[in-house]
Length: 231
Ligand SMILES: Nc1ncnc2c1ncn2[C@@H]1O[C@H](COP(=O)(O)OP(=O)(O)OP(=O)(O)O)[C@@H](O)[C@H]1O
Ligand SMILES: [Mg+2]
Image (tube, rainbow, N blue to C red; front, side, top):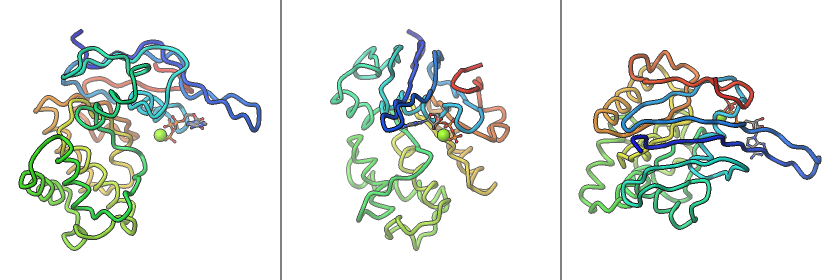
């Protein structure tokens, strides 16, 4: 397979038992992402964009379909059904995810969060320290915040930290859920620069953007989600 990721006929429905109701997350989604490509997803709120990323990251398990991922270390895998241990390894070493909302790790400073990400991919302490510094500086997180706990950070500061943590690993596949929402134009530009750099280095990316024009020229293909379907 020349593609890094091949999603075929994936459907996710949520059953709300309390109300005896079924909600469609996404339906019969198919998409292919070639190695090194940067693919964008756009679409209205609630149309199922985040659901697709969560299925790939296996925060959700689909009812139907396959999500074939060409792993660097483990060969071809179906992320819809591979075991949890494999999934944990992929999240640590190959697949990065910038969620729409930051989950703050308790009692861990901003600097430690980014350093830990580098240590997870097997780098030594000195490398972790220098890469973390470089990343926090790139996103212009105020130095006075580096050794603080992010639970009190502003929305934009949390988002920049979240992106720094995912990007510092140079993952093979990076999933980005609105990485530029709530950022000012200057910070957005820093994100764009990093995306550009990762792309040159061969990272494959799938990102949700409501202002995809901002990524103009970088995005190889765009999918539009409409009420659970891709067009
Ligand atoms: N865990 C869940 N339980 C129940 N319903 C869910 C769950 N996750 C998503 N949904 C529903 O699935 C649909 C798609 O949600 P999703 O978060 O994928 O939308 P989105 O396109 O990312 O929207 P936004 O642009 O607002 O982030 C929505 O109707 C949402 O309410
Ligand atoms: Mg979303």
